[in-house]
Length: 150
Image (cartoon, rainbow, N blue to C red; front, top):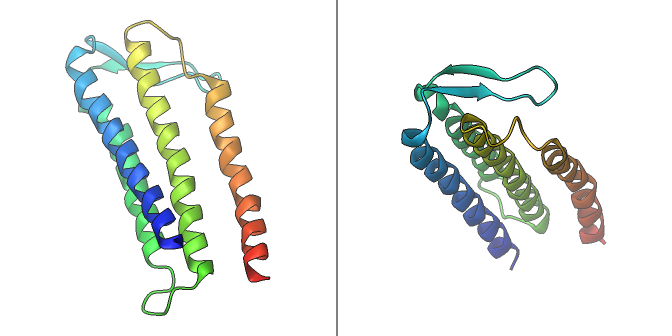
């Protein structure tokens, strides 16, 4: 059952990655000539540039994040029998990756909306809530590991 939960989390990560690429590929032809490449997250202002393939830096970075996280999860305990602790670590990695994927999608969708003058920046509450959830996941999984050892 534990392997199934890690697989389900991995599938949802794939769905989120496909959603980000779909958003980028569908939105790119519809963008105006000048687009934001960076939004006002911490009061730094919006960075505008001519429309270019640099717009795809966010889904590329998201893809690299996914490759790194999945590779890291697969390298846990290679060649040995996988105990419940290894599966729990994989679940933690994949669940954390889901929230990072949601952060990348939020940044990308905010760029598209800012390019069309619908928003001025990212929704800071949503962005910080996602980071907060990631920080809460670590003690949650430590507690689960401690309970699992009993």
